[in-house]
Structure formats: structure tokens, C-alpha cells
Image (cartoon, rainbow, N blue to C red; front, side, top):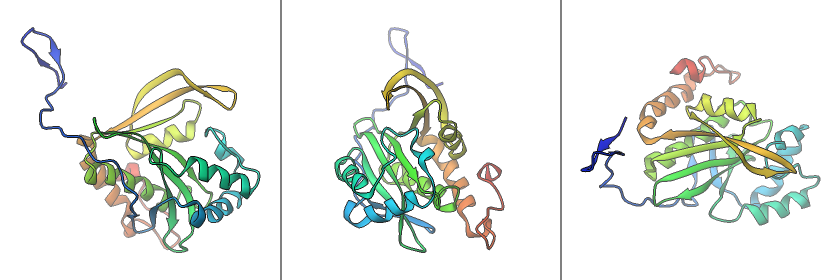
Length: 234
């Protein structure tokens, strides 16, 4: 679609002469109406996250992550300190605006400012965050930061090809399916074929309007149930 011809008569990609390296994401608060994303602080958020994750039997939520479930708060705290304190992946806690409690975590990873590509991953939402406006808004806040503030070209979502819930979520949010990388890695003593999804900067303006429409307070009844689905808003 974007092919041009060079002086040798060979097809080449679209011109990007004006492209400049983009900044890396920073440790800032991403503020929404229903939730906010705050750089993860193991001291401030560790106990709240652990409590949210054990509130209900959520062992199945850890199946497709390379770590967890954690059997006690000390084990969880050690993981937070060792895995969640760097800049890539860069972790955020999802904070409920009503309770000011940390109820989930997300991250940017495989950050490549030189070419403007970044991935969202390590998504772990507690039961009280799943299937709520906060969950969708958290994803929207990250997209808006990536495209509107940082100016990246490509936003990626990858998951175990067996993880039907993650693949369904990616499509619901507007990511495009790209295919399977067979035997891409291994974890927890098993093979992982990885499903790839992406979202591009040129697709973002239309998706942004859809998210605005869905996240509008008028789209939810007094019990917080949606009136129109994200798909309906398309």
C-alpha cells in the first residue's frame, strides 16, 4: 500500500525523512475519570495490590504470565522489587479514583524510541477491576500517552496464542491481529506460541473518538453498566 519505486525499479516503503527519535515514557501520572495510572511503587502499592489479587480465587489469572501466582505477600513483594522497578518494562499501578486503592498493574515494555515502537504487557487486573470502565480507561490512557504525547508509530500487544481472553481483549480495544510466532519462547515449563497484534498512529484518531464516546459518563447506568458496547460505538 505504501510502496514506492526506487531508481532501480524496486518497491520500497513509504518515505519517513522527517522522522525523529521519540522520547521514552516517563514516570508520570496518567489521569482518567474512573482511574489513574501511577508509576508502581512497591512500598506504597504492594500491600494494596496483593490484597486485591487475593480477594477472590484468581489463580487462573496468572496462567499466561511468566510469574505467579504468589503464595504470600512476602513472595509478592520480592517479585515487585526485583521485576517492577526498572524502566523497561516500566510498570504502573492502576488506582481506583473512588477508593484511591491500587487494584491492578500494567506496563510499557520493549520500548524502542529510535523507531517509535512500544508494547503494552504484564497486564494483571484484579477481579474488582476486570470488565469495568476503569479497565478500558486504563488501556485508553496508555494509548493516548503513546500516540498523543510521545508520538510513537506503532503500539504492540502480544500474548500466548492459547490465551483466548487476551486475544479477544486486543481485538475489542482496536488492535489488529498480525499472526503467530511459533515457538517464540517458553515459560513455566511449557512452549509459547505468541500471537501478535498492533495499533498504528494513523489508526489512532478514529479509535480515540470511539473511546471518548464509550467512556462518556452518559454511556453508563447508575449501576455502572454500559449502555453501548465499544463495538457499538464503532
